[in-house]
Length: 283
Image (cartoon, rainbow, N blue to C red; front, side, top):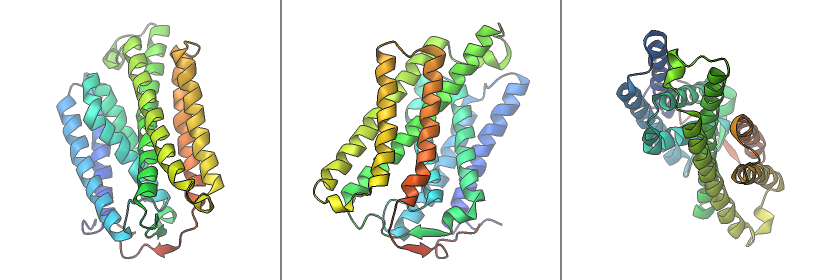
């Protein structure tokens, strides 16, 4: 039985609401299409509130932004993607985007909860009380949430492209936005992701120049590599040398690269870790 007095209890509850978005959306697709946009948004909003409560409890316990282990990073990334959808996603007028966002949030949340080793230890006071480094890390992880939403729009583009290729525009394919709309949405999300990650690196660089000994070379290399790859993709898209299906695949690869970079970034930390008993690492 879940104990809501622990942060993991809140995270489990949030994951169940995200899973409900997936189930409700799938049932809608099998019957007559995703018409319950308000239900999707409501379920996402409740799940988001529970996840925010869990992150707040964890943040208070560790004395800063909860980014001290792989579990917290995955939860924060899922929260970032959900935040972006709830704030600006509905303006795209696509119920399918809410469906896919719920799927992604459920997957990231449930995977992190299903691997106890990811939360076996956690770093306390990870940023040494430095608000600038904490702000840098939070911005970087939030940009990864934007990359996650970008990956979803890219998947939707590939589905829409496939439906046109095989001349199947009915059924649930009819609820996908048009090719042109998805291209515009993806480009805007990529611009936002690059801008946020650039701001994160600028904040980090401003501090590291004061204290170069505090900079972890491996972490910098991985983060800058993701940023550089995103910048290249954006440049190629703006110059019309990377468009349509190839652009969608490139954006999808960017998110996969961002996810793969989380391991090296988390493993590069040398802060002392504390056992996760006080925060209730078991549901």
